Length: 109
Length: 116
Image 1 (tube, one colour):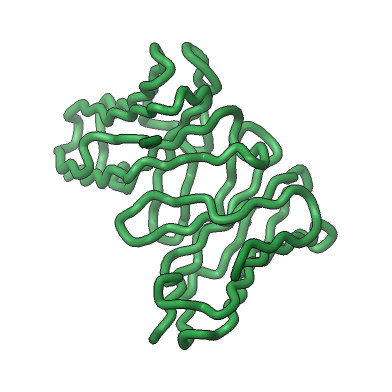
Image 2 (cartoon, one colour):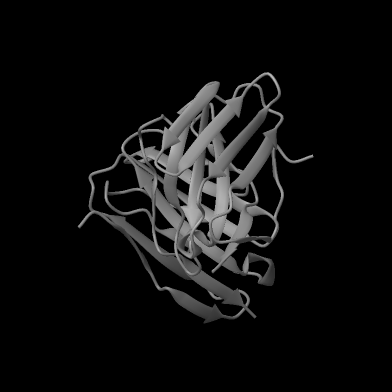
């Protein structure tokens, strides 16, 4: 079993929809939780990070962490075609960063 | 402009022919690492370095070598490449150890390697 599980998708939604992306994990030592966005033919870029449990909002994006369930989510409101990318969750509690496999999101105009 | 650069961006080679992928950052970051990205497996860390002359193995170090002689450079060396090392490789850097909250990890543009 992988330490971090993420549905690969693809997830296809119409423009304006609310998108929910999720990851589950098994390592209780993880303390930092991040979401990266990766456009085609580009390196990942940090979108949001959260420390421990709770919610964090940044514009149209909301990250949630539930450590008791070992479950993290990223919500995108009013999704735009420019949000079409692969979203990778990542977690850390050590010098190494562990990534999920990524979910490919397609937002159709 | 703050950036991580990698060269080459694309490389096709043959089994056993030694190659080096260079990585350089201009942000004076202490922490650098190499990842490979494969379909369905996501990003997996190969090696990381917490400072000059300090390197350590990640999840998938077999078949790879690294060196950190200068703070800005962190080359990835494949002494005898094999077809199972065909992958997309990313170099990344950050101010300190990975995942420390606000310490953003910056990724390079990637190197697509094909080993025949």
